[in-house]
Image 1 (cartoon, rainbow, N blue to C red):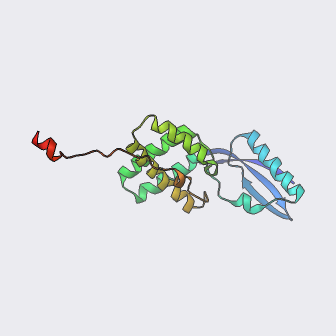
Image 2 (cartoon, helix red, strand yellow; image 1 turned 180 degrees about the vertical axis):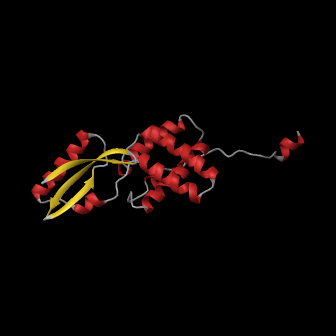
Image 3 (cartoon, rainbow, N blue to C red; image 1 turned 180 degrees about the horizontal axis):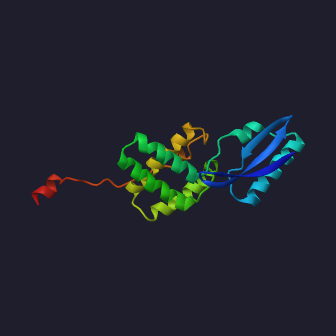
Amino acid sequence: MACLRKRVNKWGTVYDVDFTVDGKRYIRSTMTSDLRVAKQVLHDIQGKIARGKFNLEEYDRKEITLKMFIDEHLAYAGKVKKESTVKLQHIHAATFLRIVGDRNLRTIRPQVLDHWKAERLGKIKPNTFNIEKRSLQAMFEIARRWGYIETNPFIDVSLVKTEERRLYLTDDELQR
């Protein structure tokens, strides 16, 4: 009915599930190199096929991990954006990856972003946070356009209010 296959790609070793539905053979990636997780995916597919609740469209959605997307995006951005922008996006993405971990893009929820926001605001100034948030939001908008996610999760993250700094003297200050 279904079996696992080990395959090596440019990111390392991954497992594929080889299965048959309605007399047609399909091979889909589990997007993991962990055998235990791959077996869980295999058993999930087998159970859904046995119950008649298997939805191929669900498994055909583009699935990608955060690290894989960052690498793909930076390769793309290096060709179409300024070098300084790509450097900043690389720094922001690496920091985001370090905080939230390498996970499937579809699992980045508001709770994860709130955790990221709290940690970043403890270390950087509000203006810097707003720049970082806009940079990541632009990256995730590309992920949405490429079909990796349905909606951009950063849209719901609000910018932090900042104090306005004066770069001039008032008349009173000038006379003193």
